[in-house]
Image: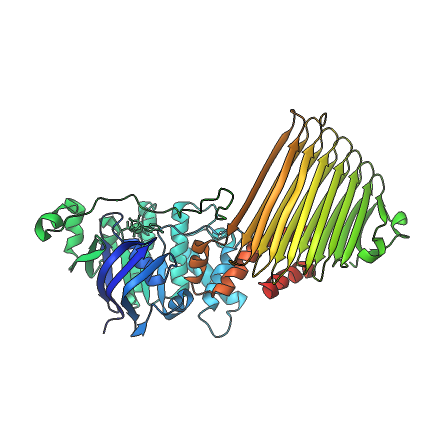
Length: 272
Length: 265
Ligand SMILES: Nc1ncnc2c1ncn2[C@@H]1O[C@H](COP(=O)(O)OP(=O)(O)O)[C@@H](O)[C@H]1O
Ligand SMILES: [Mg+2]
């Protein structure tokens, strides 16, 4: 039995089916590279595993250490050891980053961490991701640059010590040095037998973290699940070969949905 | 330092600069005069259920008023009239319960008078509250800002209304009006209908009004790190209403406001 097992997973958003029967198993200590053209369901898969309310699971199952994930609340999933480093981390005005991090750390402890110990681990983790300490005391992600947001995601991963780390384009918006920093953290956590599921469009990150496997999602299905040599191949040739070798036609690349569409009434807009 | 409790009799003999606290019973329907050049810092720790404050601010006076309301409220009304160079700042942390129609009227009657109004209101249970906040620019160079923030939970209803108006001739005046309500539950209701009424060209005015649901993405983000939905809502509410705390000097007041958020969400 795998650590995380996904069987015949179908999921839709706003009535449109995005995941069309995903099968995937991830074991302890594995680092799985997740590839695929834009708009084919990579982020959707990670969001569904974590439990984002916008995605409706219509069929299939997800288990983690043998337990049914789909019946768990989002926070339960987190406390069991699932972690999602988001592609576009939200800015939450007014919520202090350190209050948030502390609540997150406390959520998996019996007794709340002391202020002294909390700042000790926060300081250490900030240094590890080379994030200026003052970012920890500002409002959560508010006004952070793209790179700072991503570092904040990695900082959270360090503090929360998850069992499965899912990272969604953690390297986009990062410069070479910052990618090295993130890769160093991942290498260190790999040594602790954590499992990783990592989405990236760039071979650079994968070169640094040495995935044990690569999977490719096209049209909402896993079409390749094999050794990491696929990464190099896609990096040099693109996805074209999948069409010719596997006979799968790739549906048109769609612009990615980052913005949540809002209700129609003009004054009712989501508070940013 | 303990604040001096003021009443009708001792207010006239206050030193020019003072920090006081006020029991709303003692000033109900009475006129409070802030004398020329007086600088007064007033703390109102809880309102009586019916409160009517009338404040006349003479030339060059300054008043900073911080109000915490935490019990049953039926009616709160504050009327302030400002003379030349007078400045009033009001920070109102509203955690009252009940049904109330509340009125704020600030008259900037003379040149260079200034008003800064900040309201943070939390409405839950079956509370039904309206805040009608009006600021009238009746003279030149008058400046005002009205910030109204609300959170609506359960079956609470909250309305922000009122007018910011700049009269003809009140040149170089500036006014800004913000109303923002965050609605947590399907059954809760938030309405903003602030009005700007401008009869003069040579001015600056702006307003923003928004009612929004608590963001799914924010909740997802916080809960995906292990916070329960309730903890996440508390943090978000606290973050949203927190700016009002800047108006409260005493640490104990800030703590009380946090614990009210903790209790009421
Ligand atoms: N929140 C959303 N609302 C509407 N459509 C969405 C949402 N998230 C994803 N989609 C749609 O689902 C499809 C897959 O998107 P996504 O999983 O983000 O792709 P990828 O991460 O592989 O680039 C796209 O067609 C996208 O438009
Ligand atoms: Mg994506």
